[in-house]
Image (cartoon, rainbow, N blue to C red; front, side, top):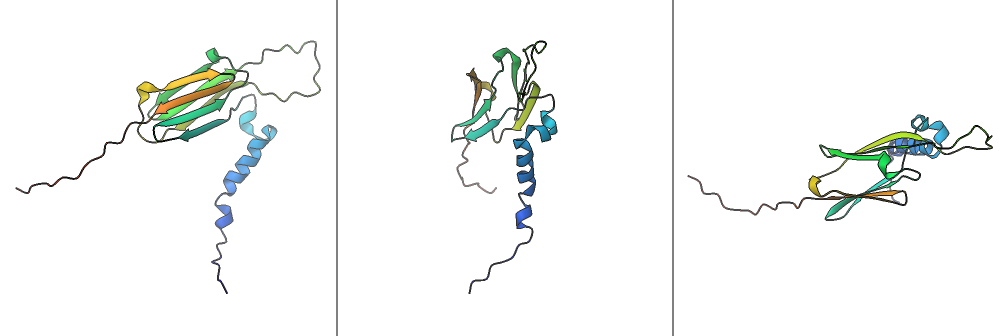
Length: 144
């Protein structure tokens, strides 16, 4: 017979993430969606670079701003509502508009001089080069 250790609080570890994910699925329940646009962003890495990909449909390149300060990457901008509603009555209106700002801490040492950003077809792609780790070789220290 195998004994399994009972951990009553194990399920609560990710409970906050699950609740937040549920509310992010429904914009009407998320207070951050009121009068604002909240783009989805993926951050990944390989041995040489950190990659940031953001979905920004309906946004013009001139309405975006990217900044990096103290390893905090900030992507901000505005999705403008340019449609006129004077002569239309809507059956449904689900698109969101407004300004946004997303900030992320970029891990590790990076080369801030070689950041590359491209915006094409509503996708913003940022590539941040990592600095090579300086390997300290061992040495013998003489005692005086």
